[in-house]
Length: 108
View 1 (cartoon, one colour):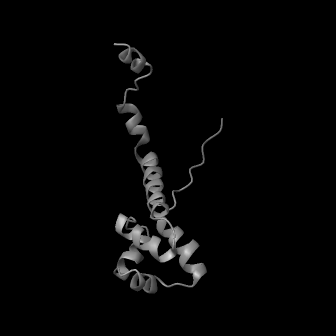
View 2 (cartoon, helix red, strand yellow):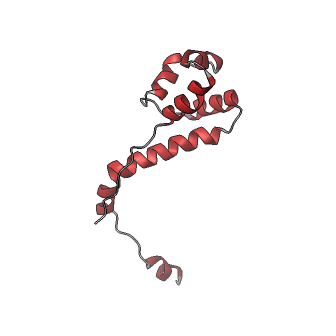
View 3 (cartoon, rainbow, N blue to C red):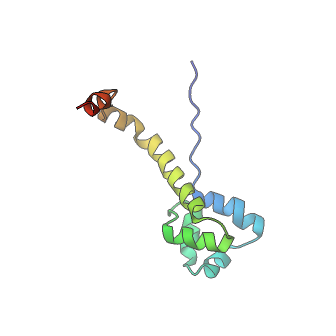
C-alpha cells in the first residue's frame, strides 16, 4: 500500500526571499523602503508569520513589474494547502456530499 508523502506547503515569503530578493541582491530593508512599508512587514512575510495582503501584493507587483495576482495566488495556494492538511479530515466527516441530488432538484 502506498502512503502519500506530505510536502510541507511553501509560504510565499520563502518564494520572495529565495526567488527574488537573494538572486537580485536586494535586502529586506531595501525592499521595504522601496515599496514604502515597514521593514517588519517584509521580515514577517519572509519568516512565514504574516500573509501577503492585497496591499503588499500590489506593492510587490509594481516593484518587480509583474502581476499582483502572482503574489495573491501564492498566498491563496499556501493557505489552501495548509487548510487541506489541517482541516480536510474533519470537514470530510461533517459534510454530506450531494451526489446526484442536484440533478433531481433541477428537474422541478
